[in-house]
Image 1 (cartoon, rainbow, N blue to C red):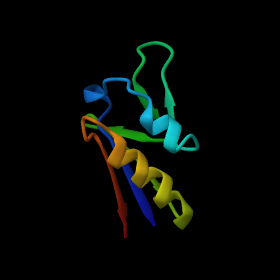
Image 2 (tube, rainbow, N blue to C red):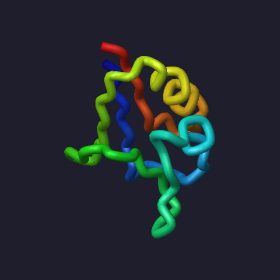
Image 3 (cartoon, rainbow, N blue to C red):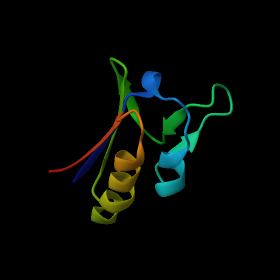
Image 4 (tube, helix red, strand yellow):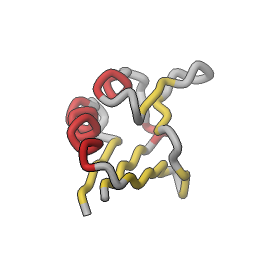
Length: 76
């Protein structure tokens, strides 16, 4: 299981996440911030759980590329 978390309010709209993991991230046309697709929001954290192990690598690249460190990716 892979857990991906985004703190959307802190996003600066650099677009790295959408470039590295387009299956999981898009840029909002409304405010220019990142959107974690199919996520659930709780207290400012948007989270997705996926059983697909191949989701880890692109999301981990997006996490490492993020200049404000608002993406976390965990394997459980």
